[in-house]
Image 1 (cartoon, rainbow, N blue to C red):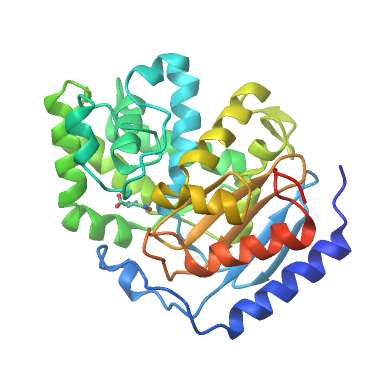
Image 2 (cartoon, rainbow, N blue to C red):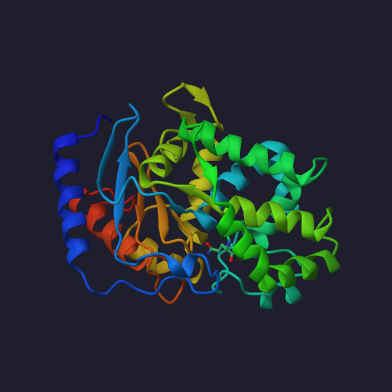
Length: 313
Ligand SMILES: NC(=O)CC[C@H](N)C(=O)O
């Protein structure tokens, strides 16, 4: 269905103005030193349709660290490599725990709850790495993101990757713990090196909204017409984003926004309105669950004003 560009444009502009005026901005992620330097006063939004048309406002052309949003793309790649055998290593249930929690791993024999918490994404990265050098695996992830975004200029922010590599003790603990259960195939430091670097990919809201389109349009990358995944897989990735994309804030996100979404600690959120649009928002301040505070509020206003919730107007 064609988007009413005029209407979307006015809602997007209105929301950007409202977000600019707000003083409650959340807290920038402090545990990755490089991210703690980002100015919390920023807000960007971009909505992409199947024609590659982008409606944007605010700081939509500023690149930010996409962090856990890359987990959507690594999951897509890993499903392409392993198909449904992937689900032997990682579950499909919401965790109800923080993104970097270790507690469930002990009870559940090292199998992470889902591919979007850190443990699950590290297990997915390990699968992509198998049979490759870390540099090749990372290249494959980056090229895949450039392909779905139709933009070869997307890069890794090396300063962010190095910053997380230096301070990633919690992720190291998760990875070694999974290794002890036989979940990891590769040397842990190799897998983590790839993980830290793909989390450090930098994108603008415009690039991210374009990259998400295959999920909004039945698995097809609309600019090239090429199939990224089949419609069933696109639908299932969306289902996982809805149930698990915001950690222990996933229920609240579904309740308020009503779209599949994936957040990252850089303050970005990718949200999918199936058949309508792919949406990216960014504001660096986070809420208590580690999801963008204003990003979530902006999406809530957007779906309400445009009637885009998958649960009805
Ligand atoms: N929620 C996130 O964005 C977490 C990603 C971050 N790279 C980490 O592993 O801690």
